[in-house]
Amino acid sequence: MLIIELTYQKPLSEIEKYLVAHREWLDQYYEKGLLIASGPKHPRDGGIIIALTDKETAAKLIQEDPFYKQGLAHYKITEFEPVKYCKELAQKILE
Image (tube, rainbow, N blue to C red; front, side):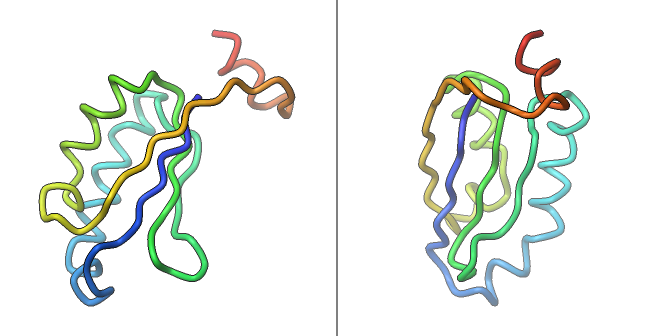
């Protein structure tokens, strides 16, 4: 499982221009079952994506993100092994 942390590199006015496209990019990977959750950080200087994939695949997916293509965000990928989780997530993790 991965935590992908985005840190914005441009003002929010630039981020907002690509927010719909960014969320559409996310939607395609929710539909494929690769993402669990995502959203902005508070304060709003970036965002977090929780993914069920490996680092190599995540790196490839990131390159398709409109934020990445426009140089709007820096991405940090942290891999971790969940040892405790809610029952709703158990099926996804154990697949």
